[in-house]
Amino acid sequence: MFFHKKKLDKMDSLYSKLVLLSRKKYLYIDFKIPDNLSSRIYIIFIYTSFILINLKGKSEKAKILSQDIFDSMFKQIEIHLREIGMGDVSINKKMKKLIKLFYNILLKCENFENIKETEIKVLFKELFYSNSEGLNAELSALIHHINKFKFFAINLSLNNIEDGDINFEN
Image 1 (cartoon, helix red, strand yellow):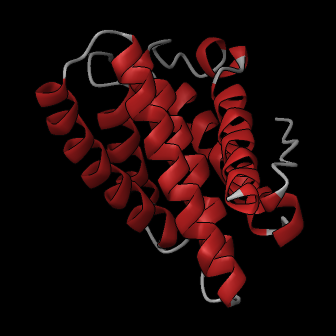
Image 2 (image 1 turned 180 degrees about the vertical axis):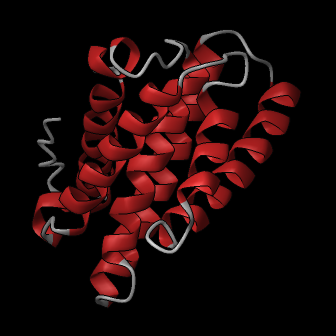
């Protein structure tokens, strides 16, 4: 039981680090992303996707770590939704939608280099800019930022990921 708790603590630490990255002010100021819970969750999903892509197909330990990251992320999101007052039925519906959205984002991130920039722009507009017009410069800058994070994430070591040592600076 002690080792299981230690592993969960590490995953919660990793999730906390991703939350901190999703709260960086430049995301909301420079890229004009709406500063709300949904946007933060979407950013966490994008960042997590690139970390999971890094782990894909590496080793049994990496496979287990990927599942632990996924489980911890959705456990923490559920806890946060409960803290803001959502009930069981609402949470179940919301979690199903979020899991489906996460897999959609993960699939797009896996093919990020092969997807046309216009398709990436459509995805980011849907996620972040659905109520905004004329943010092409911010959208292009956001895509550049995500590319930088992708490069950073795919070069993280298994130990860095496991320890939550994710010190990304834009």
